Length: 305
Image (cartoon, rainbow, N blue to C red; front, side, top):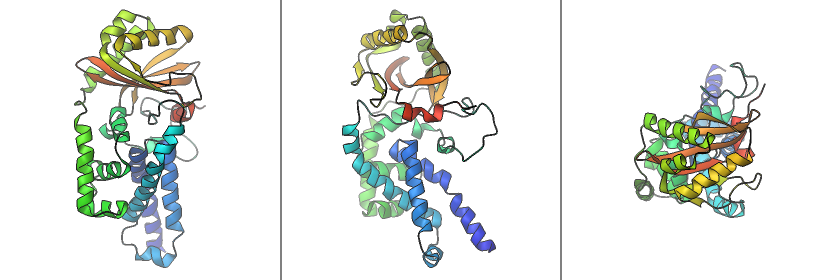
């Protein structure tokens, strides 16, 4: 019984790793949780004799989770086409600065978002580039370059040879090579703070100065809240749009908070989060803004109690 109990504990202990893998593959906390739940359901659906034959349950669960995510990514293009406006990954809060319970002792199951490690591989700029990859490229790259799985194991997920998986990861790497090197956290935080101050004072000139002339702002409302359906291009147009938003939303409070591990802004009204904004910054100027407004994607930011 002790061996069975230890094995059960070992299997349960894989959940955090699987959630981290699935979120990076899917860009959605909800879908990541569903994929992991599905993988566990398949494990517990195996006969006991088959479970005992599997030397590494963790590797088995990772392979199955990877295949489920691969299937979801394969159908994602069609789902994105039906999505109202632009689709962006779900933003993640840092629980050290954003406790949605109002207290440290939270009852009930852990929020999957709390289990995701906030590193450079979940930065919004990184996740957006992952969205440009094919499903197979994304799986090969994330499993190998982020989680260090060998290509022999990735081959089992993708149903391809290790050599083919290596080529897929190399192709994904080339897509990422066009992305700029990340700005140091201190420099990024300073730019975000100045954007916040200029936005609060509705200072268009200051905003234009902080935005790259070729900057692009993309908003995700999912058809559930009002927002622009197409990207806003150009620093001046973005600055004007930001000030127009401020004019239409009296009482909106801007907070400097970590978003997916890097400095961002959270806009809330009467304690309810309305928008979570991420920024890409180069040479002291904002080059990209990703504003998530879809309420379904802001659930990890909801405050309770």
